[in-house]
Image (cartoon, rainbow, N blue to C red):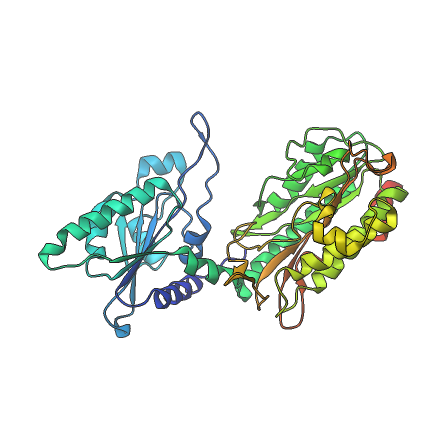
Length: 444
């Protein structure tokens, strides 16, 4: 199993220490445990930015990075975490503990999480700036406010408290936006697992199958390869594909319908994100094929627009023009293409953007605009490219033969100096490829 080394996390902390400047402190807490219902927890997933800096996946943990008066003094990394507890470990699993935080996670200092309120006050002394993730959790905001008030009250003893409180996300989000080779490798593994899952879905789908049974096939492929679902899977047959975030997945897949699957794996805390749409019976109808090829043409052109120096918005603009022209050619819309785009009349059939950042989170961090302008693609940025068309089942403005058809095609793309790198290319997506793959199984 591929994992990031502690050297990677140490390098990230060093970069952060340089960004916050001298006489500063950064405090970052992981996610709290979330209850599913009654006394049953959701399976724990640590906060992505906390993981990014520490590699520490346990709950109830806080990382602290301090800088001092001179660059020669470097920085200090402290980790507050749960202590070892034999009884609790029997029930809930092993803990790193204080010794593990130092030995295995290379903290300079480690403390029991119960000592955070006490120990943090000393660390705040004589710091000019405090960086933390303002607004992430109200309870933690209140604790930080109390620490600052207490530290400020002690200034009469000859120490000072931070005079500035600065949003830490502005720094960490920008660090996370640019993926290095290690991260791309993990995302490639996640993408390959997801591609295998979508291929499996194409191989096993049959009329009469339930959507949740197809979802189970995806989850099996994720799990046996060391992945977990990166988000709630969408398996929408027929008109359910026209519901963008359809997750009930509890209807029968019918002969003659398409099924839209938006599902992907997370591997070692890095996500992929794939959508494929294909016929339940293995053969596109003429209407389905016509719409599908419009979406595919738009997607291929949008992927090609993920070029270093291009505006983030360029793939969307490219996709919209091709989608609108296709709708005009098929008679689903009438009018002038430029007027339709300017008035966004196409949103009747295409109501979402063409992509989003991808990384440790499916909708990953990083600003889309800089100084009010769409930012340009840079090396190592990863984006989804996912145009679609959705003809509502009750849309009486179009011929009945088009109604209830929903199509989306999505791939994960890295901006590189050599052009766009498609991480999810392993799974087929042309009409001919899909039908050929499914025909082999049908024949068998």
